[in-house]
Length: 294
Image (cartoon, rainbow, N blue to C red; front, side, top):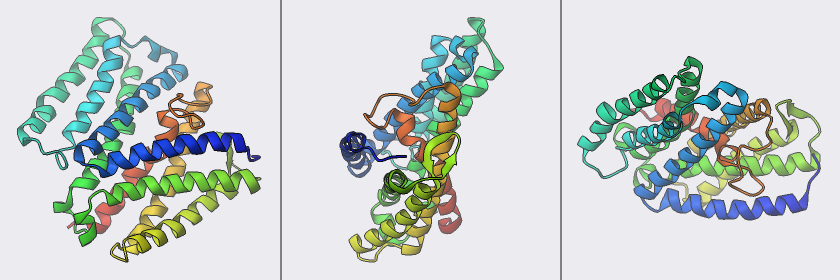
């Protein structure tokens, strides 16, 4: 994969704008944190439906209520799981969990039955999308908010955005380094589903990330973070993120498209940008559950 400076310039400029939006959303307050990932989930679900309709033509036949109801249901699930970070009466969260979400799921199911477009395959595709996207991203809320259930280091308890930010930064660094190294010296293809990814770039991206990010965070936070945990977080994020990228590449290959959308010049759509995060977050949450659960 030869290095193309004009492509890199477009990718770099759009990545800077994207990074600013992400950093503000993650750090500003809990509402911005919730809104950021809810918007990401909406974009990803929309593109997911388009991709799967190309792979499974029968999925094009879902009703309009099913199509948009899935997105509303996804955001509702995320809201119901955000009770650890949003300052809202617990009764409202219970209302969503016990009534609104089951009703929305029922409407989604009945909409296809009433319009005679019901298909078990389509239903499975839709609910798989809910697990893959909004439920995965909802783990960010749990990671950020459940300090009462985890024996965090004191710094994590005081600055709850640190771990979500480290996950995102690890993915960014890994993607950037893998792209740059792979462009200059990459020769051996990593996987047939992603022809531009190389073993050289992938290994370099992981190694640079697990060395660079813990070193920088130790310097910035003056050793108050657990460096061993940051190292493990970076390692898990980069490896799981790489598989998330390959999974999305496989879907696009089956659908016969290069990008899932056009949200970011040089990067593609929401799924192109967040495919790594969708798989990395569950694995980091599992790592934290093992290490920090009281």
